[in-house]
Image 1 (cartoon, rainbow, N blue to C red):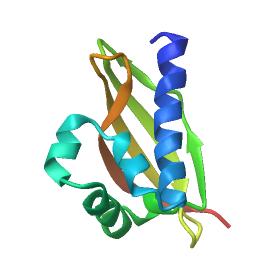
Image 2 (tube, rainbow, N blue to C red):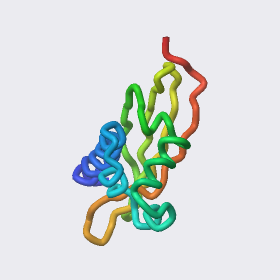
Image 3 (cartoon, rainbow, N blue to C red):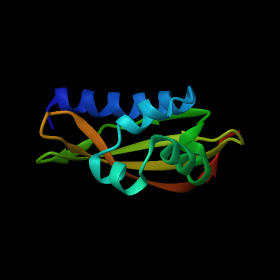
Amino acid sequence: MPPKDEKQILRVVRSQLDAFAHGDAAKAFSYAAPNIRRQVGTAEQFMEMVRTQYEVVYRPASATFLRPSGQAGEAVLHVQLTDEDGDLWTAVYTLQKQKNKSWRITGCALSPNAVTMV
């Protein structure tokens, strides 16, 4: 994957997390791919879904980004998240390069890790 794409992918996910942190539903929703936007409906519904179903994504205590991987306009990015209780989670983001060359998030799978930070 070209370094330019890696940087753009990291920027998209970081920017969405930042938008969540600032309560900016419209901005957070803007990083979602068309499939997610159609499925969820509105920016407010998107924010509510993330807040209730992906709490650690909505307000992580910390986030560590691994190097994205992928090919042919598809990418995967693993992000290690820590929640407010110190529990570790892995968020696996999938992204797709759009016709306008921007990257957008097509999904996020969240799973708890067995290790707890002390």
